[in-house]
Image 1 (cartoon, one colour):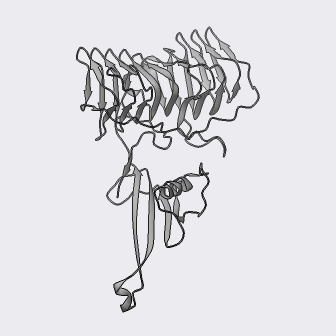
Image 2: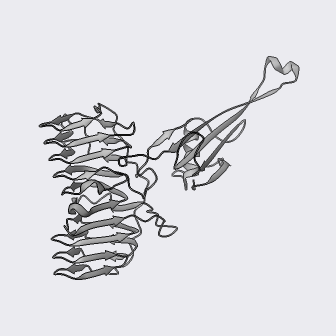
Image 3: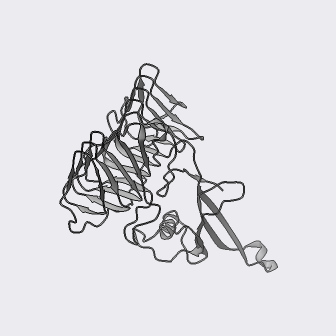
Length: 363
């Protein structure tokens, strides 16, 4: 469904998987016994306008109407009765960070130590069934705000003054991958055999297919032009390097996304899609689902990742003194390690679907 969709009747035939969000809603309705045809009508609508009394970023409405044959009142000429129901779900702005999903089903999938803060106004979902699914130490904090909750399939262990607030929900059902339907990009021919930069100075790169690794060391200042970067061997930064890119998606078909330059990290996701076929609006980092390489973000006090970080099969280490500006909308990783005085505490300004704001049933 587009951002604005007037009430549209569901088609009688829907392919699986559906070709768009409108038909995805129609298919879900059909699987629950509500299909367009006969005496039933099913329609979907959506808009970005705020609803009365509720601040929303986007809402979608499903409506089902049915014509019923009257019995006793038919003798009075009332042969039919139209009945119906509707429901509205909306994405509402959150405060204090977007949703966080840790997908590893077993073992200690979250480690939080030092004075690290992980804060979410959308919700934190940890799928590990281990009795030590979350290990915390020092003065580390995990906090859910804005009425959100911390949900753990297993349990958690803490030492020192480490806390989870409010008390987590334990023994919950594992969350599903919110970006499972996001398709990887089409990889064309190489536009670069890789880039190795060291020493000092500055360098600007353009979108394309990088068949060799991007390796940056020394005190190089790297600038990324807007667009999609397909990295077959990842990116590795070290030393006092810096990286800046606005409107950028880093997709790693292989290798990790390791950015530890103390000179600063400032990456923001695109706010509009690259083309009709490559749709990564709001996605900043996306290693492929078959890529199990580890990734690391440790950019010192000047680290800002503004957009979705989606690492479905790899681990993410988030460390350093990143202050309160370490922004991430939705964070979906296989496993997560926080250390030092790192923070994720404010919502990003770029979203991908549910990034940065929870979906709620309004009416």
